[in-house]
Length: 329
Length: 255
Ligand SMILES: Cc1cc2nc3c(=O)[nH]c(=O)nc-3n(C[C@H](O)[C@H](O)[C@H](O)COP(=O)(O)OP(=O)(O)OC[C@H]3O[C@@H](n4cnc5c(N)ncnc54)[C@H](O)[C@@H]3O)c2cc1C
Ligand SMILES: Nc1ncnc2c1ncn2[C@@H]1O[C@H](COP(=O)(O)O)[C@@H](O)[C@H]1O
View 1 (cartoon, chains in turn cyan, blue):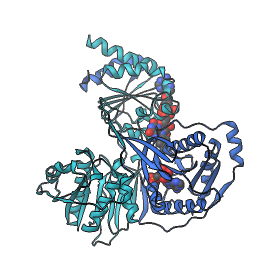
View 2: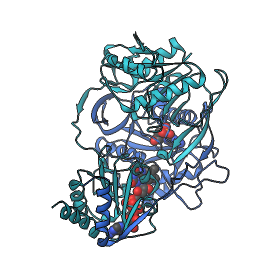
View 3: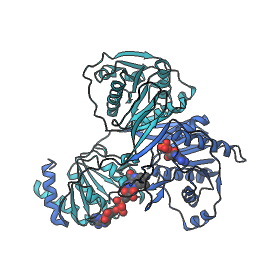
View 4: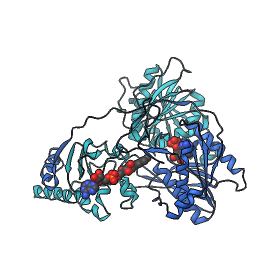
């Protein structure tokens, strides 16, 4: 019996969250005293095996099939179900990303088994034997609330909540034996395949920008964002916004920060004319430093921020830009 | 074209989420209710498809009788029929919810109007975020499913679905009948018109009793995550604070 970690990749490019979930899986395997195994899907990912060994995977199962050249929720789930059939793992762990959650939902639906999305590394109680229920803590509301849950299942299916486990190499790295296998794919896997695919050359994105200048309802109009654009450009950053802004059609949803938008990881986030609703906060709180600019000293974002300027953003934002230019001259 | 949209009533918290004393629920004493933004977009997507191709849109929820409020909201937007699968009050686990929806769909499809060409879900519910109910329903009904949709069009009997993951845009083509989970940003949801609001008051809410057992995941209690201590420094009022802001940027090495 083992813990099986599903390794998320895109055409062989490892997704950073995959190493988090692999580390989560290793902690789980250590706890229940079993081996950690990994599975990569599609031959494009074969080259990952040695690296996964450094993170403690003893065996790396490699699903090979002509339908698995690209991601496919059905094909990936069928591959995992094939391995569950042959290896009978204790638990299957994937990353708490869109794809990770999607694939495990498909696995769970096939087995008619429960699947717990976005589990935290803390508070896990795994029980003495295979059939004992597990207790675990998962995130809700995009992370603003936790839930204690009990899980009764033969194979425990779960994803690791994002950015809650640091990817760490194993003290005693395994040899990572590659184990190619032919998954049993259902007919469906030939239907729900990617028909077309475009890779966008990502410049600075909202998720990765080091500076984000965010605007909310207080900006007042699409044109009102011009000074925010200016400030962002001066600092090599990008503009973000709240849902009030996207709902008004002032900006595209790709700029939205929050529970149903993007989680940022900036060094600095300027929150201008944003009240700081919990659903916005879960997207903004990944920033290392938050500077709120708001007319209301009692606004939630102001009380939670690192720094605040009380005033009209339409005056304050241009003044900051002017000051930057003055000092750079 | 016959479309079904599945929505879930959830509280609409503001600055923070407070829990009831027993930790079993969000304290909604001073809160309104809503649905996930993804589901608002699911409604919009369903209504837009019916406008383009003709047919009808139905909205369905599994929840307490109060969830009628969200169904009437859907009706005010133009959904032609609304269906409530009443629960006993407590939130159901994802397997049980999926079984209840599947049962209701089978019941509705056995009627004179026949099958749904498309069943639209949100990518995830706002409160519990299980990322699975739509996938389970699709499986139970033996229909293809793609989640995370940021684009959805139907041509003849094929649904084209576009989604974006980590800078990669993928296109899928699913033969109808199919299931799709949509994400906010796929469209800009409409607001109810005055006329819509008035007619929605008179809409009949059809009730279908739930079938299906509880699944293997059960909530024990809700917990508030530890609060991060605030170290707020007020840099000043208005434009006079600009130099202090730039000092902070300088300290952080951003100049
Ligand atoms: C399930 C769910 C998911 C959600 N997901 C998201 C999400 O992903 N992202 C998101 O942002 N929201 C999300 N929301 C919406 C969220 O609850 C809030 O409604 C939204 O964030 C409010 O946007 P806002 O702060 O811009 O507007 P408001 O709350 O109206 O705040 C405007 C702020 O601007 C200030 N202000 C006004 N004029 C000025 C001025 N001239 N200068 C300076 N300050 C000024 C005001 O004092 C106020 O603080 C979600 C809601 C739900 C229910
Ligand atoms: N109680 C419910 N009633 C109707 N639809 C639901 C319910 N719960 C979840 N759904 C639908 O399933 C989607 C995914 O939910 P979840 O698996 O909880 O993240 C939601 O966006 C809704 O479209």
